[in-house]
Amino acid sequence: MTAVDLLELARSVAGSAQPGEQIEAYAARTRETDIEVFRGEVESLSVAGVSGVGIRVVTDHRQGFAWAGTFDADVVAETLAEARDNASFAEPDEWSGLATAADAASVPVARLDLWREDFLSVSTDEKVRFAIDLDARVSNADPRIREVESTSYGDGLVESAIASSEGVEASVRRTVCSASSSALAEADGQTQSGFGFSLGRSFTELDADFIVSMATERVLRLLGARPLKSRRLPVVLDPLVTAQFLGVLAAAFNGESMLKGRSLFLDRVGEAVAAPFVQLGDDPTDAAMPGATMHDSEGVPCRRNALVTDGVLQGFLHNSATARRAGTRTTGSATRAGYTSTPGVGVRALSLKPGTRSFDEIVASMPDALYVQSVSGLHSGTNPISGDFSVGAEGLVVRDGALAEPVREVTVASTLPRMLLDVSEIGSDLTTLGGSTAGVTLVVSEMTMSGA
Image (cartoon, rainbow, N blue to C red; front, side, top):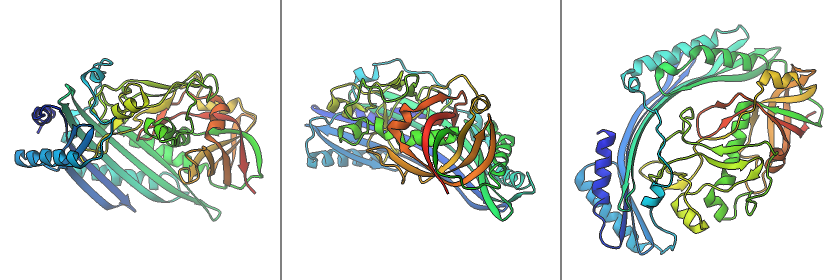
């Protein structure tokens, strides 16, 4: 079934609305491949496809939901009846309701090229050979690499369509591929790990050479790492570390969290929350981001939402329901796990506006700092309400404008609000690991480092 057929199906269900009733149908088809290689052998392989439809019915501010893992007409009709029945038992919520035609027309629809037709022509055998070859290349890249911890390949396609009795209609097709490898290197009885990765819309866009060189560089430069004495000093965050911090910070911009009083930016719109040159936004219309899409999960056009401009908090992300509750308009930020769930709120492409200097140029300008290549325990070590964090870190000393000795067993600690205010430079190297955030080299003027 093509995306056009999905839209016809959704229209048919939405057209069943009775007077006083709102109906939304979300139909989707996905296919995913996941391959894990260990020691040159395929450790796991899965190729899975699912398809189905989720139906929301809203009557008298009562919402009912039901889903079916098939497009069979009889089953879809039964699912609609179940959603209606669920609505009749639901607690009334004055803010319940679907996105409106006005919401769908609030901004122009971005035209994005997110589909690669050659994605469909690559066999599973080719993908397996790619992963095994990548594993071998990383393993043999340097004599100090003891083994490859893991090598993986993954891809996915999504075709979805949504239609509602409120005049909302949208369809999206997307493909994405990724590969990564994590190497273990050993010297003088010490073992370190480092990984490389590549992303693309199709198999042919993956760069195995880049993965090998990235994994090799990141693991070898950590060999010989030693603890450092505790002190406060400037910190240079690797783009992948910055992306992880943004992943934690994303919850603070969630309108649903804000309404529940769980955002560290509660009641701070219009206030300075970051250094005055910081621009932070969520832009699902950036086709370079893996989470890019034209419409959100309610069929509302996505757009760039400025969250922090010149260091000042601009607002929160909303779907139609949280927007009504907050007395504002949806920001096209509805997300859902698939046809089995109702829409929530979330980021799709959260990133800082890049600066002008590269990582090498930034390091060359610093007499004394800590470059953090990776962190551990970020989610468990961060308080999402206060923003306090204390995480393990690995990296290298920056001395006299160059990367120097590697360090290990150190902890960096601060709060997310303090870190945003202490940003002193943003690099030009916007990097995405996948998921919903992208990072850049980020310099924080001072953080507490606890070591030996």
